[in-house]
Length: 251
Image 1: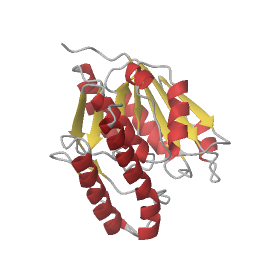
Image 2 (image 1 turned 120 degrees about the horizontal axis):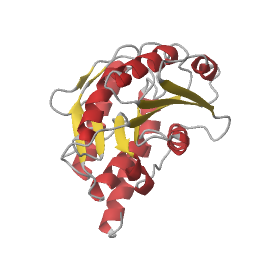
Image 3 (image 1 turned 90 degrees about the vertical axis):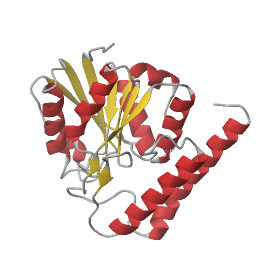
Image 4 (image 1 turned 45 degrees about the horizontal axis):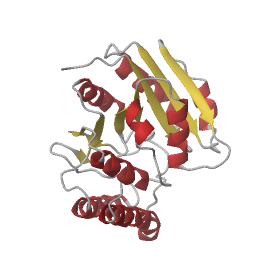
C-alpha cells in the first residue's frame, strides 16, 4: 500500500561550491514542489567555504520552500556535515546529494516515489541497469575506472545484490537514521551506512541515473592516483571492518 510523503528535508553539504549552489537550490526546490509535496526545506551545510558558498546560499529564496544555511566553522568533513544536517532537519524524509550537479536534482522525485511505495531507503545508482556516468576533465578516466573497480570489490566482499556502494545520492525515512547513524570521514560513510541498513533488514531499492560532469569548481576526491589511493584506502578499511564485524557476530 502506498503512503504519501508530506514533508522532505534536502541536505546539501558544501565546500567551495559558489558556482553551483544558487542554481542547485532553485532547481531542487522546483522539482520537489512540482511533485505536490507541501512541506519542503533545503539545508545548505557549508564547511566555511573560502569562496563564501554559505553567503551565496543565504541570499537564495524559493517560493514555498524553507532554505536554511548552516555555516560550520570547526570539525569540517563530509560526514560531519551530513550529521549536522540530519540533526537540524525537521521533516519526515531526508534526502542528500552532491552539490556539483553530478547528482541531478531531477532524479530526486523517483526516490521519493519509491518511498511512497513502501521502501525505507531509495538510492540513485550509476551501476544498476539503466544507470551510468559521464566524467570530464583531469583524471576523469582514472576516476571512472577506479570507481568501478572499487564498487565491484565492495560488492564481492559485502552484499553482491547492491550495486552502488559509493552513490551518496539517497532518500531515507527519518526513523532509519535514528537507528543507523552515519559513521566515517568522507565517502566511505555510505558503504558503512547502506551495508548496516541492509543487515538491519530495512527495505532498500536502487534506481538508475546517469551521473553528469561537475558544472563548475574542482573535485574534492582528487585527480591523481595518489589522491585516489589516500581516499580509497579508507573505503577498503571500512569494508574489512564490516566483514570482521559480521564474522564476530556484530552489526
